[in-house]
Image (tube, rainbow, N blue to C red; front, top):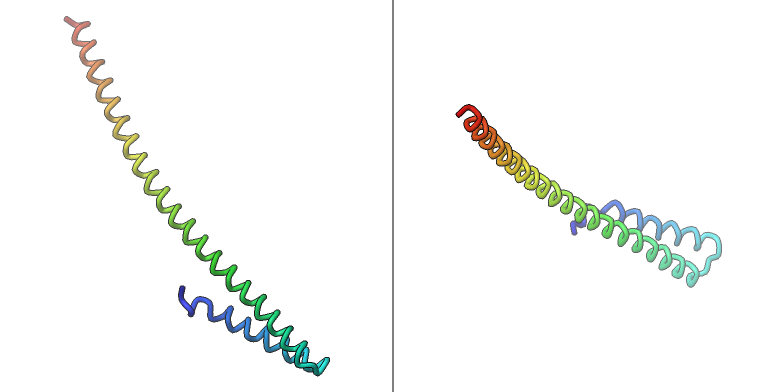
Length: 104
C-alpha cells in the first residue's frame, strides 16, 4: 500500500476534521462536543479510506483473474485448433484411403 495513492484522501479527511472542529467551536464554544464531532469525522474519514483500500484490492483481484482467464482461454483456443487440425488431417487420410480403394 503506497501512501502516495491515498494522500488526497488523507488530506480530505484532515480537512473534514478541521472544518468540523471549526464549525462546532464557532457555534457552541464547547470543547467536548468539538472533540466528539472531530472523532466522529475522523472515524468517517477512516471508513472511507478503508473502503477505498478494499476497493483497490478488489480491482487488483479482478485484474489478476481476468489475466488468468485470458491466458486459459488462449491455451484452450490453441488446444482446440490443434484438435481441429488433427481431426481434419485424419479425415483427409480417411478420404484419401477410401478414394484409393474406390479407384482400385
